Length: 367
Image (cartoon, rainbow, N blue to C red; front, side, top):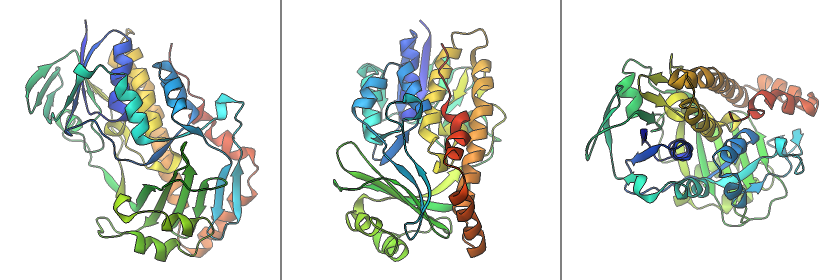
């Protein structure tokens, strides 16, 4: 039986483990944290991600713990609509599911045998020939999956000359409130600022805020957000009041410069370790799920890891570049540029957004 070691127990790592196990591999998942837990907030699963989950047999379980997104769109800070989207609940091709990240991790973790999960195991180095040196010794495998995030130890070991992650000029705050009534979700754009929100299945609301600013600034909490967004349209002030300062996640946003390859001998990178991107298209987790499915399928093909690289690198790098461009425009702060941007979005035909996203969400899993 072929043996794989997955470094990292997040979405990409656990999905890779599930996909490989379903194809008959013996898998171990090494996670540096003392437990397989996730403290994140909400995330959106676009149709491509839902197809990836279906491919590894978890589509139904994830749908049971998610909610289909309702009407949404983009507004300005005063609440005037720039663009509206009406998902079609009868058409799976355009469904978007909202789920708490912890719930998605729980579904993935449950699909991996307990004895395959190695929490509290810190990866120190990886040899591309198939050796992992970690806090409990040394392990060998036919495949090493680097799923250990944007600061990947696997990537640093195997691609030591690779560029470091770069700050994109803006940071984000994310949280989940107690149940709160909202009619519809979406994003609102200001000048160098954004605020978005969506309902989760149990009535809680996931919201995020984005603002331009210097890298590494600390101590920025609810008071700061109320100063920035407290005068924006409803229900944004109420959502701020519904939040707890100690439950807000605050992060500078980074992206990973393009790698020339995602594979080296017996090592493959997935998710943020390969192509960390800004969240501006909602595709970070979605692309990690695609990676997992394609990696496992590629191991059954003659092309092997080279085939995985050919299938995944061009697509994920295009999406990452587009996410960056989208975020840059959304974060414009000069008044003339903001007025131009809002006018273009407002006058675009309703079908423009769905057409522009078709190449991303129309992905289908390999057989």
